[in-house]
Length: 130
Image (tube, rainbow, N blue to C red; front, top):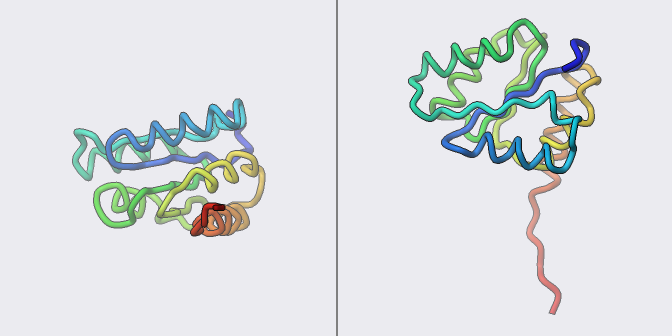
């Protein structure tokens, strides 16, 4: 992983984080190397926060959560108090993760806005053709 790139951590309930990161890797290949999964399975809130902080280290990071409430969101918020170097994006989806891995060279604020917009745009109601 290049030191000039922003690290991404997907923190989610059960196997969701690994499944999402695996899907991104299948689509994006090596670009997905900046993305790390973290599950809350078998972890208390403090242990989850400590593991997240170890994964992030001192690098700039975006932490993607499935829910802002609950253990995953609480650990993310606790670990990302340095808003200049870390951000939390809740409601993670595949399009936003793909956007993230292809744009990790952007400044943190711009990258967060970009992935939020891509995630929102991906939520739609599709009507099948008849």
